Structure formats: C-alpha cells, structure tokens
Length: 61
Image (cartoon, rainbow, N blue to C red; front, side, top):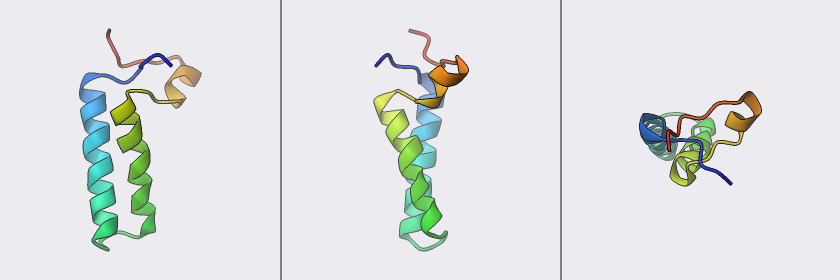
C-alpha cells in the first residue's frame, strides 16, 4: 500500500476527524459525527482508498 495522503491534507484529515468525533461524543451533533473516524484513520495511515480510483495523490514523496 503506497501512501497517497501527505502534508496539509493529512493534517486537515486528522483535525477534522478529531473534531467530528469530539462533537459526537459531547452530543453536539448526532451519531453521524462518528464518521470522523474515516478521515482520522486515512490521515493516520496516510492512505485514502478513493484517491487511486480518481488518480490523485497529495503525497509528494
């Protein structure tokens, strides 16, 4: 599995994921907020399964 998420994209995914999960845990948004697990996981492992399908990569290495 070649990494395809890098730099600012990675940071944005991690921050968005944590914020969504926190909002869901605090009851501010509904259960849908736990969808934040997806951007959090893709940011942490540096791989987005959608990117190869559309031929994109934000990883410059």
